[in-house]
Image (tube, rainbow over all chains, first blue to last red; front, side):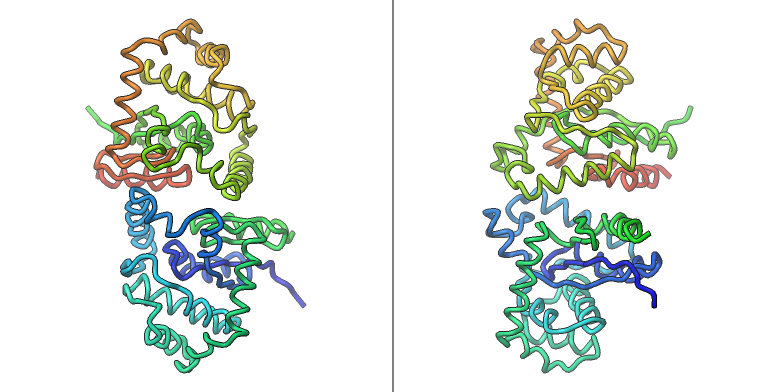
Length: 201
Length: 201
C-alpha cells in the first residue's frame, strides 16, 4: 500500500486566479506524484471580516486593471481562453454549494466545467441553467442543481468556509499541505507541491 | 553598436518583496541579456490615493502574517538572511532620497546595501547613521547622506513617484518594459525579463 502526499486546493468560483490554477493543477500535481483534494469555499465572509464588501479588484481599480492584464498574459501562456464575465465578480454561491455536494473526481470535473464556462466563455454562473450546463459537461445529471438547496449542503459549504478561515486562508486559490503550510496564489502552486513532497520524504 | 533591452525596476525601501528582487535582479537580468534601470520611489502617496494610511500588511493582519512566512520561504530558497525590522514598515523617505540623488551602478550598490541592512540585519533605515553605513558599504562617502535635504533631490523623488503612478504602479517591486508592460511582484521578474526580450526581437 502506497500513500501519496496530498495538498488541499482551496478554490472560489468568483476568483480569477483560481481559474488557471484549476485548469493546470492536475497535470502539475501528477507530474510530481502529489494528490489533490479539491476544497470549494466562498471568500465573501472572509472578505467581510476584513471590512471588504466587494472584490479588492473593484475596491482598488488600478489593481483590478492590472489583474485583468496579468490574467490575459497568464492564460495566454497556458493556452487557455480568457473572458471576464459581467458582472465581476460573479455570485459563486450556487456553484460552490453544488461543488460541496459532490465528491472526488466528480467535484473536480464539475469545478473545471464551471471555470471553463465562467472565465473561458464569460458565462453567468449564478444562472441555474449555466450551473446545469456545467453538470452536463462533467457527465452528471443537470437536475443535481437542485441539491444546492438542501440544508445539509448549505451547512457543508459554511463549515468548509469556516475551516478555510481557521487555516488562515484569506484569498484564492490557496494550497495547504498536510503540515499546515499555506501557499496563496496560482503562481505558488509549484512551491506548494514541492513542499508537500519534502514533508513526505 | 549593440543595444540591450531594458527593464525599469521600481523599488520601495519599505517593501519586503523588493528585497529579494533587488538581491537577485542583476544575475537574472544578466543571464538573459537585459539591462536594468533602478528606479527608486515611495508608495506612501500612491497608497494614500487608494485610501490606505498604513501598509496593507498591517491593515490586514492575516495577510501580513502570511507575507512574513512567504518571505521567510522565499529568502531561504535564495540563501538570503531575513530579519523584519521594527517598526514595520520602515520610514523609507531618507534612503529613497539618497538613492534618487545617485545614478547608475552607485544607485544600485547603495540600494542593495540598504536592503541588506534593513531586511538582512533588521536595522532602522530612517536613522541617518544607518543610511551613512549603507553609503559606506556601497563604497561612497557617508557624508552624502546630507544630500537628501537638497530641494532638487526631494523634487526628483517626487517626480519619480508621480511617474510611477502615471505608469500604473500600485505596489513594489514593479517591473516595466520599454513598451509599457507592467509586472508586479518579485515572482514576476522572469516573466518581465522574457517580455523585454520578446519585444526586442
